[in-house]
Length: 375
Image 1 (cartoon, rainbow, N blue to C red):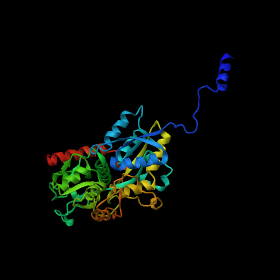
Image 2: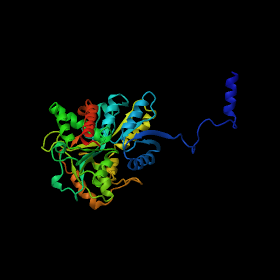
Image 3: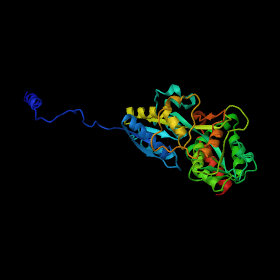
Image 4: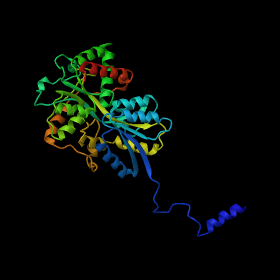
């Protein structure tokens, strides 16, 4: 009774401390923690636009160019029992698919899922894809005529290309995912076909480059290799800076058929299991899957592609965020953009083909490169 009386007196006392917020007080900040392997210069303005639109602060941790996604995926595994991150924005698919299979990311249903092509839906909703890039082969047109450029993965393992092809370390980034899909598809069609391809590729003494896909393009620019297997965004970046480069969409096989076209590797977004800020994470993921973000990435220095069937026209009135590096040197880039977007039979990343034999395929390719190139 005494306690109740004191409490009642405190409520009636005009000098008692205020226990609730009043209009004008600052509300507790809403936060989402994102691990991001997309290029920081492109991703930061997009994350800032999300904050401006929603009021949710993004605390972002970025990956380096060389380890692309692998280092952040390792951190997510280490933090599994006590997650720090809410969202994983990966610049490729394989790491997201692996984390999904391991239960480190959680099933999630995007309200934008119906607008996305089916290949951009990960297994059980553990990742969603957006704004893909294409695997391409770059060359210096002043040193290599277009008629001499290999047009497929099979062609770069054919005779006559000794010391002419550069490839990034396949343990990282989109090269890793490409190798996993390519090897898995070959083995499904004909057991032993990947090992046979490796023999031919190693015989050509490829240049294994440290530093990721950008370093591959740089090797071509410097004349260390005639051709470089890389991503379309790396071509755009160098072309925008005025580098003399040609590009072809690298097919899996030259002849037409299912699974024969150039590989598309989308960005992916995943919800971390037991995310500390699940509501804010959902808002960020829906934002990244919006048509306007795909359009921004398409118009950015990355030059990402717009998936067939995705309507970005309604997002055209939304200006790109301040600080987003846009494509420049339009005259140089336009020709390459036309080539990159002209492939009619593109192949999307397929986690069901890629996952089972990924590590073995990557290890075998790296060993073949080191053994064949001796450098």
